[in-house]
Image 1 (cartoon, rainbow, N blue to C red):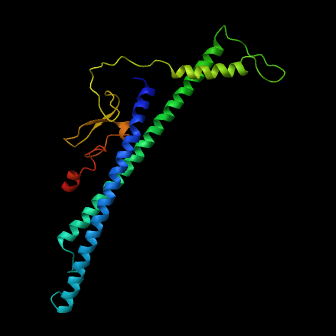
Image 2 (image 1 turned 180 degrees about the vertical axis):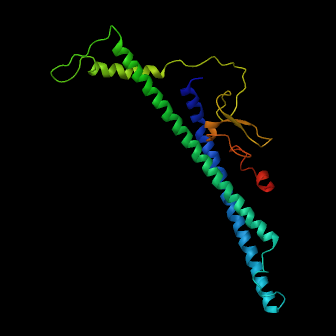
Image 3 (image 1 turned 90 degrees about the horizontal axis):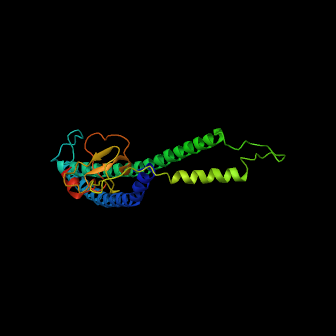
Length: 227
């Protein structure tokens, strides 16, 4: 499969992947707000109880000995974990877009190199038309006709068949539903329906450290409860 076809395949899946990621961020945001309200109410109740205990003489007024309950502290830690998941999803969305931009830049540079190579070959060929400068300063080979031919050559380069035959029975992976190619990463959720993903399709540039979950699995309720 040619580079352009690979890029188009991954680009087609990008809007759906971003929409899914943003949807997960909204769900996490709603969950975080509810958890924060619950944590604040819990802490306020415990603070009131501590104040009443001090006034009644049941609690020593030593701030080094006063602390929130384990339940209140666990609620606060849960809020931090949810916030970290939101940041991770936002970073993943940014990396996905940035990766596609870099791929497009790479393709444009390659097309420019091919165009220059073709122009140099045409100029160096024995049967090439010499450049004759006219009074107006234009050259015979690089006038309107020359520019038109250069544009036509660039368009023809887009149609170069660089594809290799692909076995129709070969399994497909990732959101783009393409065969295995390049660097790929596996989702650490054992129940993931897709399992394997191309780096470019999920915004990765190198092997992730530790466990990695795809956009479909990173925000699953079961994973959040298990943290």
